[in-house]
Amino acid sequence: MAEADLDAVIRQTARAQTKAVMAAAKKRQAVWVARAAKAKDKETKARFRHLATSTILNATATAKRLQNSAENAADAYARAMKKAMEEPPPATESKKKSEKKSEKKPAKKKAAA
Image: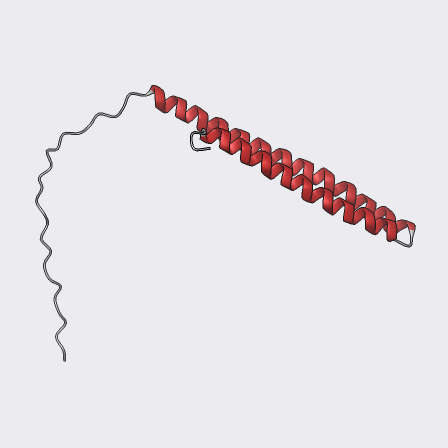
């Protein structure tokens, strides 16, 4: 990846993060489903199943937002680099500045009382 464009790296990182989010959500969903299977009453089973479903729905929405943010950032970077390549280089300023070094006065010592 030494020669990779930064926008491609941003996209690749976002894909990896999205996969990690979804894998964690699937593990969490499995925990809720297992708890639902062990539940004694109907109401508790329904609550755990609802939590399992909500986990996947919320994780999917989060992954989509993460992916969209990364896409926007990568596109913005690509546009900025394209614009920078089209702009002429900045004009160099002539070195008319004097090379005088400012002399610092020694700090005054406080008189000991």
